[in-house]
Image (cartoon, rainbow, N blue to C red; front, side):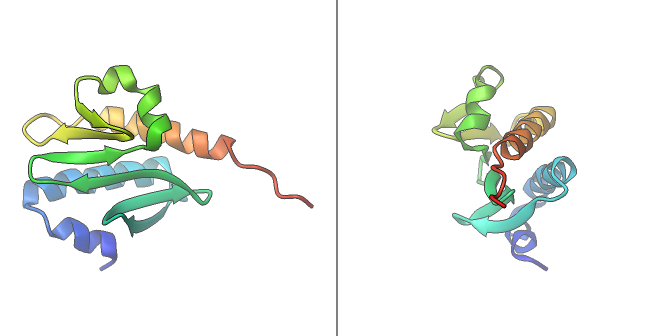
Length: 120
């Protein structure tokens, strides 16, 4: 069992299901992603750069797509409570998996296009 598996197992079954689905979305959209724990939550990087993070809480799921992910989807995310670079998806509402998928795709593209070629 890795650190992220252990993290997810600390939550009630309903929350575990949601966290596993978000994790699955990330791996589907970014098969080359590197998974770890950072800031006490699951963290994902592509090309050595942060992609997204997520966290479980008592009443919501926190999703962190760095500022560019949130800026680019501000209209769709406007119905949710937000902080700088974070959004809260309440557990008593349907989790917007399609929106999460689109944000992850956007972040993958952003990380891929910001790669600087190595000098030869």
